[in-house]
Image: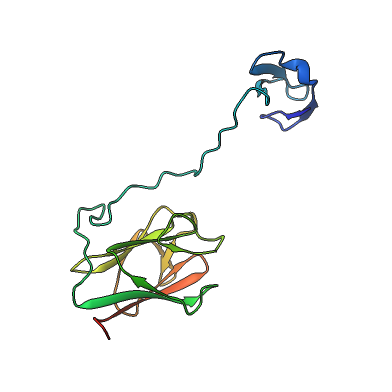
Length: 173
């Protein structure tokens, strides 16, 4: 079997019986001289983390700053896609906190430039905010990366290759 040195990348051919009945074995790299551990693939279970980052937990009804999130009673909110693969799609904002991302989000985008959970739209009685959730490529408002930004009717923000426009209308209009 082939094993790659974790320090220098040198590939070593070793016999499968290097492990015996052990789960791990030490191997000395001929190229760099460092010793590293090799795991027996027959005995060890491969464990893969599902994500590299922890996403901060925020309930649907309270922002990280403690602002109460609530949909306005007399208004309908939606997000219209102006650029990107989802061009023309209108997403209704039907809860006070809507996440946008590639997976595990309320609005899922098929866009490699979008993080798994990229940003969130937070609605309260006072205002509407877009909050970047430590995304890799950032959330842009007026072509500037933001942590949080206040939005109004017609405001736009960019997530990956998608440009969203906030539309606020009177209820039932």
